[in-house]
Image (tube, rainbow, N blue to C red):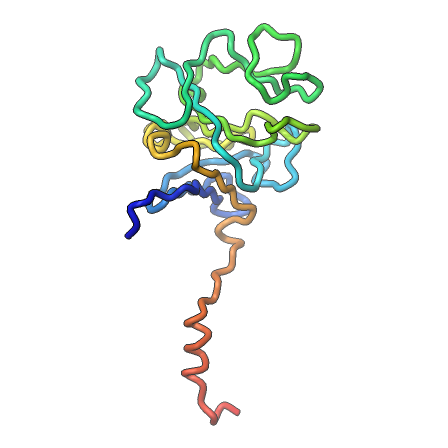
Length: 204
């Protein structure tokens, strides 16, 4: 077995009707939940969907009054009471960290429910932000009932604390467009050969 850790964090939902799924990194797996709008390749702002595709992981934000951050390799910064994230496509600061109060539509990063006590910013529609393709896609802490998000990918608190120690600037997030139920198992080449081995001329 290779000592090189996997650099792909793969996300796949259980079925087309479920927001529950699995995140896998190498041999490790964690339960996760995606957006109420499902996983979509044509995501737009406000649709509640998680974007399908492969993306980098940018940096990490955390509440230093609520948790002790473990050793991580991504750039990390504490969240402040005046931190917000702009979700207004009309703003020049769209899909960026902003200071609040702010004239543009935004969400507060300093939350009372604990969901943003720890989060990782996904490099989706940010290089540069364009159109209305969506904003504020994070890995963050899930609600206790693992209810769907507004488009982010959420994990149990302890699972996310473990995950952030394993990812780094080289890690790519790969969100599968198809659910596990929709993906057909691939026929391996040796299975094809076995079919010929089992072939009997009497079958003609």
